[in-house]
Image (tube, rainbow, N blue to C red; front, side, top):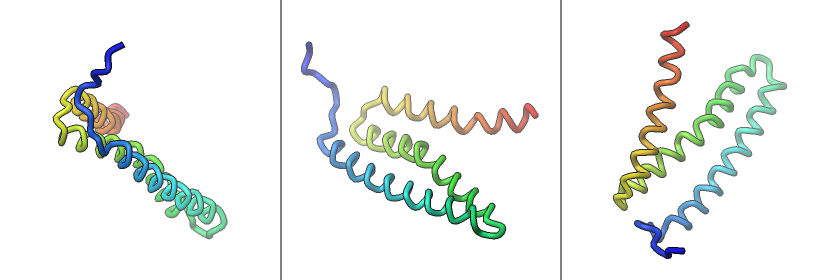
Length: 99
């Protein structure tokens, strides 16, 4: 087994831990907002905002990783992240024009 992992960002683990804590707090807030929107009159807007935030978290994380990988010039991972973000962006456009 090879010990060569290629380009490694030594601060990646700590950054992932911090981001994980932020995501956990945001998801708790989103859950509370979603629960509150169920009992609010006309809480649809708050519900849509909470769902939108929950859906944006993985996309934002991929963008964040793409930036970190670009800083250490890890090109294959940057390309994979950019392609994934392009596919996510193209999906709604295709759905809009196909309906």
